Length: 297
Image 1 (cartoon, helix red, strand yellow):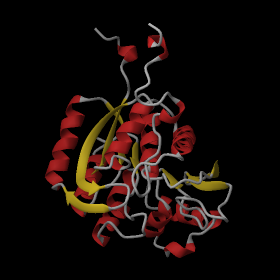
Image 2 (cartoon, helix red, strand yellow):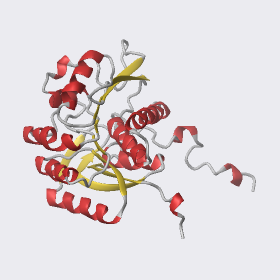
Image 3 (spheres, helix red, strand yellow):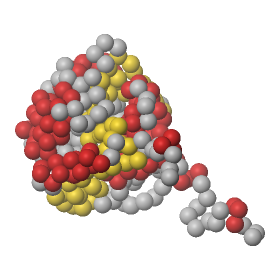
Image 4 (cartoon, one colour):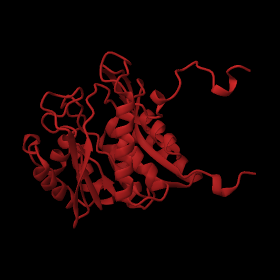
């Protein structure tokens, strides 16, 4: 019989599937597992994608998403939840109803609304469902600059420094989330492969309605950035499930993603923006190398 003290905490990710496995629910699974948390999943969409392109997207019906949520919650002790790509207004509203009923503890909403190209992924109705139905029940939301602009009701081009990020965070907080984390990864000069004028450090802004904190992290010049946003929100949810408070969870999650970026920065997987190194493989022996204990036996 397994002792209760060795049973891992449980987190739930409600997100889309990435066939290239760099982002989406696959990145969430890797992140939560790397942090010692048992990850459960609700798939909202199936995408055909790789590091270079998204070829097609199939949105699952809202009732199928709702059935998955019900199945997980009926059997497993979910301690925290994160959302990624929800895709449609109907799915946003399913998640919002569950959140309003108190079924989704320590809810982290990563509002996946805009592709890295700037292409809008959701209808205006779905965006309004985020604003009016889901965010009021979130413990934390983690928008990038484009998503922050949509939620805050401002032009994306106007969020270009810490002061405007802070203003967006305040505006989003009025929608109801307890905490807001506006991420600075799309600030001018900060790109997937870096830039000659890229800053040495990149700021994120964390706001709880009273206190505003600027969290800076080192910039990593690499094309391998696919899934960083998913991984950050998944790491935060995993740490919350393990008992951390929001500021600690955000800080440790940022460190986790930084290490994953740093360790995978030289990888050459695919023709586009490659994945990050969730498990620290780059610091381990190459695949196929026998364990040291087996050498010479």
